[in-house]
Every structure is written in C-alpha cells, then in structure tokens.
Length: 232
Image (cartoon, rainbow, N blue to C red; front, top):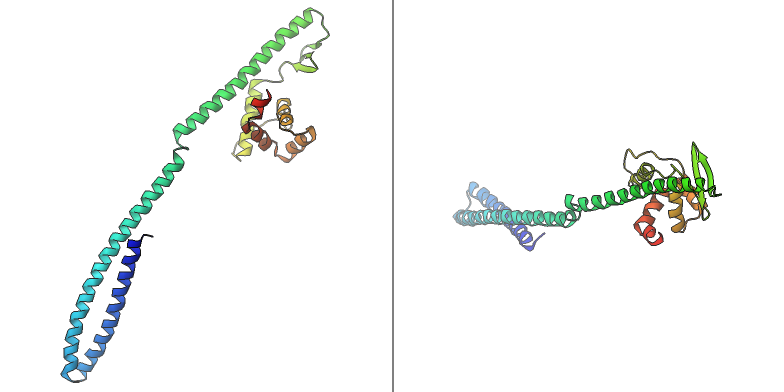
C-alpha cells in the first residue's frame, strides 16, 4: 500500500470522526432549542451548522482523494502483476518452448538414427562373421541373430529406435506425473542399465529403483547432469 493511499484513508477517517462529533453537538443543541432554552444555544447551533457543512465538504474532498489514491494503487498493482508475469513468461513462452522442443526432437532423432545404424551394422558384420566361420557368431537363425565382440553381445532387433524413444518419453511422463504415459516393459532396459551404472547405481539399486517406481527419476536426473555426454 502506498503512502498516498494511507494518507487519504486517514484523512477520510478523520473527517468522518469530526462530522460524527459535530453531529452529536448539533443534536444536543437542537434539543435544547426545542426545550425553549436561551437564544445563545440557537446562535451556537447556527455556527455548528456552518462548521458541519465545511466538514462535509472536506469529507467529499477526502473521498475524492481516496478514490484517486485507490485508482493509482490499483494501477500500480496491475502494472506490478504484469511485470511479474512478464518476467516469468519470457522464459516460458511458445518461443522458449520451441527451443526446448527442437532440442528434444533433435536428441530423440539422433537416438533413433543411432539405433538404425546399429541394426544395419549388426546385420552386416554378422553376415561377414558367418561367412568367415568365426566363433563370434552365437546365433544366426530366426528368431535370434547374435554375435559377440570384445565381451559384449550384440543381438539384432533388441535396440529398436521405437522402443528406446518410447521409453525415454515414458520416463519423462512418470517423472512429471503426466497422464497417459506410454507403456514400456517392467524392467530396466540394457541401455538404461548402462546409464545407471555410469550414474553410480549398482545393478541391485537399479532393480530396486525399478520396483519402487523411482527409476525414471534417477534416469532423468542422470541425463540432466550430462552424465551420458561425459561417459560416451
């Protein structure tokens, strides 16, 4: 509340109190006149009428001053509310969202592209290994096509882009408690286990987080800290 508004409110309160006091005196003098008392009371009554009228005019002035002060205070509060909203919404505007959305699209597209490249590369190298009769080949008949390389197994069809993109989206849904989250499997994906290991979570902790429903939060937290960029 501004000083002007406070002063205007006090002035109006003071004039109202003065008028109430004058009215009390006038009522008493009027009653004395009705009782036929001395002319002195009648003269005082006339003077008080004049004082009362002046006080009433001062009240009207105070009311106008208060109305202007209230209007100014309302305008100030409205301007402050708009400024506060502007300060927040600049970072939350459609333009700002578009930047984040574009980054998310690019990241998910990159993920999908790597998954596609992985599938193509696995099929290509598996065919070469099979032609050369190498021990790297673990299975090469439907429904399994698997080869081993440097202690890691690579199985065709297990890192599909649609699966990983869906899982990434579903984890964000869970962290943000959004409705209609995409459905994903009930256990951590091998790629997610690599991320949790990089974040310092043991396999036991990962399983426990998966059961408790906190895995999504741990994954998103790790991603936001940039652990994937540092580790791969």
